[in-house]
Length: 366
Image (cartoon, rainbow, N blue to C red; front, side, top):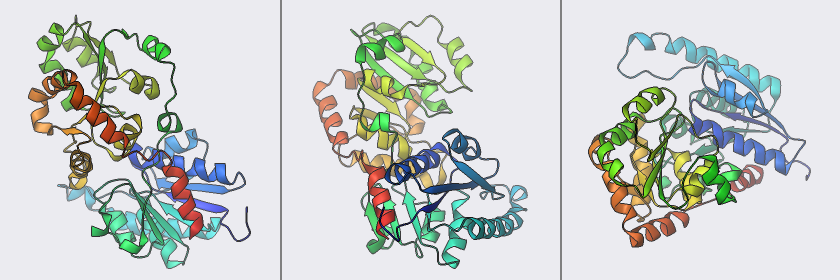
């Protein structure tokens, strides 16, 4: 480690796995580069990062910040108070820890933390996962030294001279999948002689994707040469089991704990279009059908999906059309080997498996 290089880092943000998992990947890469580095996370009290980050082996401080609740004036009454309090808390954390660099990954907590860091002239770096930037990162971009992005065309919202196209960090077991396929099929009780459709709706599941399966149940039963590895999410699991009873083609799970095994077995993949999911799917290199969630700010999942569709690297089906059309589109795609090959090749060309290394390189370069 050369002199004058940073050794103390704060990584701030969270709220969803799409913010937390890239943040942890960045921290892991910093540690791999410099085992003596000190890393502190700053999140929002009551949000999932307060649980997930300690599970990953890192310390975290919480700010009493919350996001704006659309359509509810009552829920936003305390927002100015919470913002003021979180700014004071951020000042205290920065003065106490004295970081060399602060990295913002998006989410509630990164706003006040990076705002105060900028006021204290502590260098800040942004990591924007989506193709459509969030409000927090837009506001912080003017003072950031570097902005690491995953998509082209981000100069529409960020200063062009600060942008570095690095990709989104993904888990190492996904970035370079090396799986004994026989073990993978056995783990999920899959038949290697059948085509496999993998349906993933994120850790919480996706109601629309689940409804599409139930709606197409009779058609699914006629395809004896196809099996569906289906992640329903915990909330929907029992109802999905009840609704699809007596359908051996469905291998139903509330959660898939070994995604490298699941990806390895899949012939095609149906997924939401979160930034982290897409980055993983690019590394996997399999044909993908994306159903963007309509329940996200500024419809950023549609923007994410369109970045792939425009390069013929994915198929997009709108959420309000998925119940009727999704499973049929999947079966049609399974019959089109040329389309499957083209989609898999094109999405693989967009992969950036070394994103974490590139981001950490940019952090040190400032």
